[in-house]
Amino acid sequence: MPAILSSTRLYTLYAVVLGSSAVSGFAPFYIYPATIISIAGIFYLWQQAENGRQAAWLGFFYGLGLFIAGIYWIYISLHDFGGMPWWMAAFSTFGLCAFLALFPALVGWLSKRSSLALLSAPLLWALSEWVRSWIFTGFPWLAIGYSQVPSSPLAGFMPLVGVYGVSLLTAFTATALVFAMQKAYRKAAVIAIAALWISGALLKQVPWTLPAGEPVSVALLQGNISQDLKWQEDEAQRTLDKYLQLATDTNAKFIVMPETALPMLLQYVPPDYLGALKAHAVRQQGDILFGVVEYEQESFYNSMLSIGSAPSQTYRKTHLVPFGEFIPLKQVFGWIYRDWLNIPLTDMARGGFEQRPLAIAGQKVAVNICYEDVFGEEIIHQLPEASLLVNTSNDAWYGESPAAYQHLQISQARALETGRMMLRATNTGATAIIDRNGEVLSHLPHFRTGILEGEAQGYEGATPYIRFGNWIFLLISAAGLVCLLWYRKKK
Image 1 (spheres, rainbow, N blue to C red):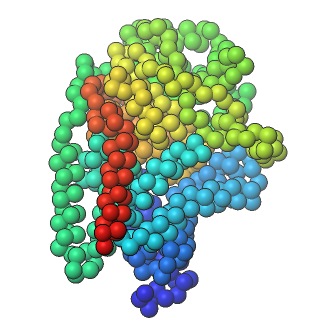
Image 2: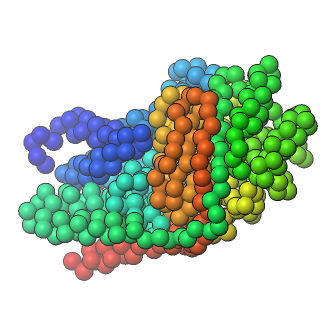
Image 3: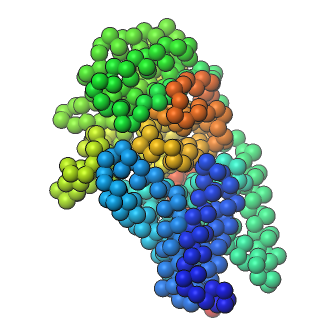
């Protein structure tokens, strides 16, 4: 081990700094090489580590740096808007970051135990992110594949292998950089990086999907309702009036309001209000999609409803946020909500996985609500039938942090994976129109009331990711591990 790394404390500090620097690759910074260099750094430290335990220690502190810098905004939702005491909110946020840091720790330990550590690390890293996407209902935020969206050549692989496949290629590039530091492997490493990145750039030119029908005029409404006022009874009418005014101020055929834009149960929304919305939509020969909470058979649903020229249709949120929309192990954790938190509607019911796209405004719209678009393998359940993706969110819970921008980048990845445009209507940002290449065409300023108008083109056809989901990535990863095990035994 080099003398400069002989100090465990210094070694650990390097890991934390590297982890926190990886966040520069994600929105709102979009400096995608930064994440690759960061991963290369931790791979190099693992290579220099004395044993698996030290590699796990370094991986853990790398993860702490990454997640504390990247998702500190959870503290804002718990303390500033949830009312949790600061010490409890800080402890809870740190606890989540520490849990997530166990994944890079495990990767470090496993890769160091292998005689082919540098080659196994990318495979294990990407597989750990995939596991993180479903274990305990999943929290795949800051998967490194997102850092390459939309500008990196590696984003060209997104329609083939999805975000975890791009994570694998990102980590492989980092491994090649480490090999390039060694004279014996430099030429091969440079060739591998060049071949990979040129292939990605060429794949970006492939039209995986084709236009379907004529573009539709759209208007995305951003009400900018403060989270601490949103559910107060005396503010409800002002909120209704604001969204009605915004809706009637646009002549778009397809109007989209954010998640829970109407801050009350659907049964309490005045019939004449819904009548005014419908009348305006019919005049435009289109439809309005609005967020509201439904109550049915003693269950609450976070829903999006359409109203207008087409028959009214509903989408109910399926993938709920643990501790935000439902209480896991309620008998164990219920006291937290009773004594520490002030979060409305924390015990929601799930919509069905069999829900189909909404036939509105001349499009087949695959709706996903807030956190759901983090799960690409769930978005494709409504494809290739759907011609257009719509995400509605309320990221006001996270204040003026990078959370809304990170969420926007995730939506950009979903557009790339599916070859579909993505429309995002949010309460405070990021309200945006994203093309099928993952590029943001237009974007409202955050924390301002406004209407984002534009055109949305529907698309038909299926990318490889739509057809096979994460199976291509999983098969590649499994084959890679089998080859490494075979090579290790042969040696």
